[in-house]
Length: 588
Image (tube, rainbow, N blue to C red; front, side):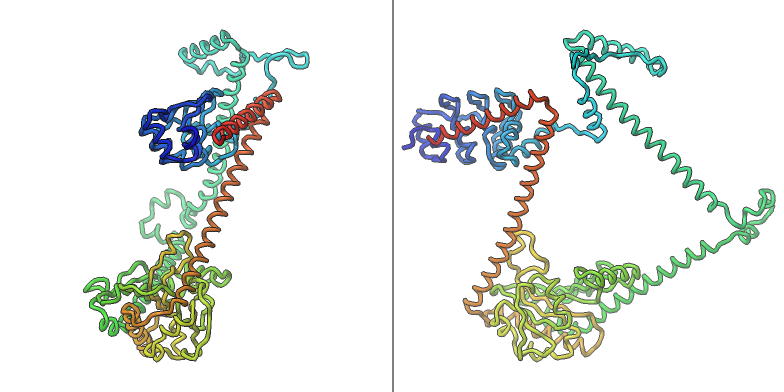
């Protein structure tokens, strides 16, 4: 058995700790010769469950050792620190014999900056300082301390400026308060140091007042300049040639006739034209959606109980360039969603802007009329990715669809020359290309059908592990068309895909374990990549935080005198030595 309860607590040997406590040989608050308790040991090594047990047995979470350190002073990770404070209600304000709180103690050691940063967020005592305040502090800190400096006597005194006349603006109560403050300074133990602080506060207030005055003085000329520029525009060109008496003698019609209305007419005409273009573009987009849905309605109604977002509504308009329709009511398919994305014809300026961005950059998709038909199966089948992709825009399909980037590209005699396969294994593409689907594809339909994809991965690249959870679906991306022959071919493709999903869910189509192992391997590689990126981000953030803390420490030491720097370095070295000795005692 372990020689004592402190070593058992450090090694997380709960049974031994329970034996010591149940036998009344030790308690959770039992101290070694240095005042170290089992609670200190468990907190130092992050044994949360053991900590909870010790507290439940009457342990004091704020117990202090011979140096005044609480268990929180020895925490080495954020998780344990949070548990001590949030669950065990540890007091993070307790100071040790050196007058340091847990946050100050850990920050001085510079071993666990993330713990110090967490504790710092609880303190809420960091002063807010502006740039002017910082400059004022630097100036005042540069002033010599009162006393003898190079044989010269340095003193700080208050002198009355008779020219200022500021006291005349003060009430008798304010004057009395100022007199009492000065009297208290003169009667203090160190009046010159107190006077120096008073000067510092006065400089701060003066800087703030100066900044406000400068802002007001800068704003006033700008306002007057703007008014001077706008004033001529307010005077009408036709009316300024007449005197006030002449204008009063005119009728309303005469006044309207002498006014120059060209600017107003131009503005009104522009608004009317823009509104007409907006309405025309909106109606045109709506007609394209209606025409497409009408063209495929026969095959959708044949395969589903309900087609439309409601019995009396075929689609819903999200905005002028986005529409959505819906179908449901089939045994092996939960739903079919039609996501329409159209050119922003209602806003010609936005259309030009998006087209320009797409032309000059490769990361922006050019606006086009397309619909993504997303089929969600209601049953289960194996996870895999396999797609039939049109060679027209093949690179864009891979670039803007994450799941296609996981596939390899291959030609096949099973497809027209205008299409290629993108899949994780040849077996997937061969078994998902049924005769019905093969016969529905023609050489010319590649101008309309962008891709037909079976996937379990998202369109956007995952940024968290949760997004890697498989969600099986079939995505058919096509351009919106009103051509009857093209709509008929799209309907044939939809019918073939619906039947193919039925066969997958009914296990009429299965895959060999070797092919499925490739899928698992691909997912593991992608997950490892994401984990590596997340770890690198955490390391960069931690390194940046450590560098920030070191810069702050250097700035703090730079503002100290030589004697204060030596004293601070000596204290830090003593704390590190004490900490190492405690850990060595635990492992003995």
